[in-house]
Length: 257
Image (cartoon, rainbow, N blue to C red; front, side, top):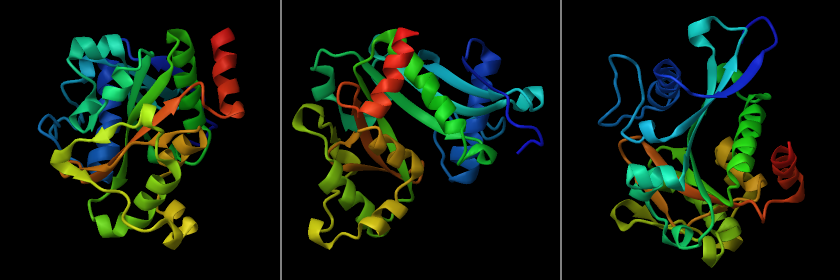
């Protein structure tokens, strides 16, 4: 962490340099830290990128107390339905059948590639990013937010507690229940509900997934094994009308601002 308190700024990427800064941070987190890979990852330049990037809005969290080319410390990738139509699909549709969401007639926003610089985890940085997402949701009058979130690794036996807990306690209602595509789908009901150790399950659940659950999020049917990125993915869905009062208030505040 820098010696000074962070001087945060939120912005949407508006130039090639901004996008590359986001891709550099994604490379540091998803490739260097977590061992991910992919056909379009640029190892020589240290950029984690894909063919969907040009269609997304990229929310950047900057700490202006860092040197200029290292100021981006947080990233979120945002895709509305009109943007997805231009891209040909949502990124999540490689892994999940989103038919129930697409057929709902409600305004959709896909969230993805969320990451923070290691020095900014566990503090206010994630809240800052979520505040930026809330403003974006309010501006575009979004009804449903969704996206894949990941457990590190593909050893299902090691993930049986958290996956089963998510399935039994947080499965989406039928009108929001997306389902994993069969090619790499993995059942999540691996343990009976009465055998679960809730504490162990939550300790094994990544902080981002727990944050979505606190917002009132649900998981879709089944996990999806991403061997290239060495992750086991679940699809989170959040209905702004169903969010708990505390977090819906954040959105209402931004909507009226």
